[in-house]
Length: 115
Image 1 (tube, rainbow, N blue to C red):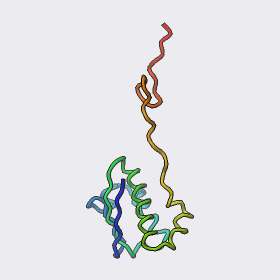
Image 2 (tube, rainbow, N blue to C red; image 1 turned 180 degrees about the horizontal axis):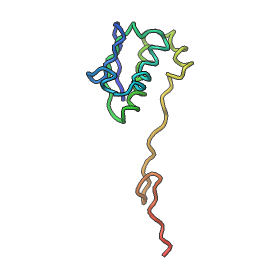
Image 3 (cartoon, rainbow, N blue to C red; image 1 turned 90 degrees about the vertical axis):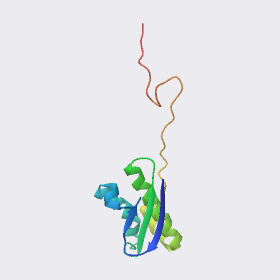
Image 4 (cartoon, rainbow, N blue to C red; image 1 turned 120 degrees about the vertical axis):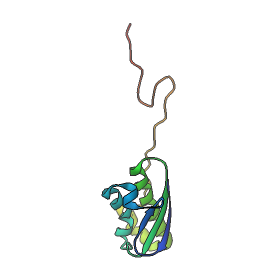
């Protein structure tokens, strides 16, 4: 889950009180987070302050990307078509499959014994 706030600024991205690269520790995740700002050419216009929790760093980066895209659309509705075209306005629908009764996990089964 990510909560995003945009401020007029210079393009600084802060996640949970840390700079984005210090928080995610991977340049690729920072690039993913910045995708909405780069696609709309607003990277140098806004500072991003965000809080993330739950899941792993990869999932948090995806949630942050969606949050930034939605925040940009709230500031300027004309950006929606550009973000939609690149696929940044769609939430990832995948969820963890529930554990089934009588089994150790969602797909795992107990070992079968013929005798």
